[in-house]
Image (cartoon, rainbow, N blue to C red; front, side):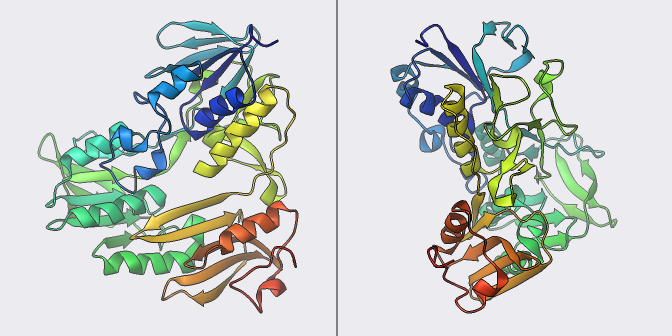
Amino acid sequence: PNNNTTFIIVGGGPAGQVCAETLRQEGFTGRLILITADQYPPYDRIKLSKQLDFSIDQIKLRPETFYKEHDIELMLSTKAVSLDSKQKLLTLNNELVFNYSSIFIATGSVPRKLTVPGSDLKNIFTLRTLSDAEAISKVLTPKSQVVILGTSFIGMEVAAYCIKQCTEGSVTVIGRSAVPFSESLGAVVGERIAKMFTEKGVKLRTGVTISSLEGDGSCVKSAVLSDGTSIPTDLVVVGLGTTYASDFLNDSGITKNDNGSIPVNKFLETNCPGIFAGGDIAEAPVYAAGDVKKTIGHWGLAHYHGKIAALNMMSVTTPLKAVPFFWTMLFGISFRYAGHATSYNDTIIAGDIESLKFACYYCKDDHVVAITTVGVDPLAAQYAELIYNGNTLYKKDISEKSLSLSTSKI
């Protein structure tokens, strides 16, 4: 019945890949096109910041034969340039125009670039793609003096990798906030992470930013900070967050937020029937936050979006039920986070934060809204399951057995 149908997926991240796979698994037999701006087939992007010298063969999600076997037309190094929702036409940068029956937009985000005097010097990088990682790897040596701007996931994970490589050099992380990860993990956990990094030799400069970069004409040689101090550097990595890759949707008829994200309903459908969006770019309901719409750039959530979008594209009506869950690995220590703490007014630490065996509960009044755990698995997964099953965890529930949750009792 759907042999004359064309489904297009724009974006080769986890949402796009899982959407394509799910469509075929669920019996979609029409034409299926997967378009990615990347020169490589879909790969495990979150590994890049943890180790910069991966090859595509080590991190690709599927062998290239997979796409042929499942009749998925994979278009590499290709960008969408415009979309006409009335005519159902997608135009690409190679001048091809496709007519679609349904489309899934999962174009993700683009790293913010540094725009200060000297930011056009060589050896100043952002990190999003394997090509970015390869470019950094090429110039990173044991003697490199690395400066990293940004104290969240990209910045701190790259710093942890670089300090192991730069045995005769230095790694300095610069951030406006008082501690790393303050926005996502909060002050208490951030402070403990800061201590981990300084113990490993990473220099942290907090409460400042880069005001200019100086060089020898071509390559960067020093970073001048907002407090007037200057740090010698020959390699700068910028981890200042991202903007949404949605410019091609201007004049498409699809509603966009001012920041470029795309609002969708609980079926991941936009205001235009048959047009879906997921992954980083989608402002989608978050079940763990009372179905308030949020944009969340998590690998696991993007996978889930891909699956839900595929089912709804095939008219198998399936609502989202998202409980965010993410993790980071720093110096071999895994930090896991579950829930969604848009705002909280108390944190409760259970266990021993010093020895890195603890849970941090984020509380909004008497409700626990999120949790970070280190060395106490499977606590974060238990909390996520509890929330997914429609339960609420209260402060009083964690006072006695704070490092174990019975998902049946609560």
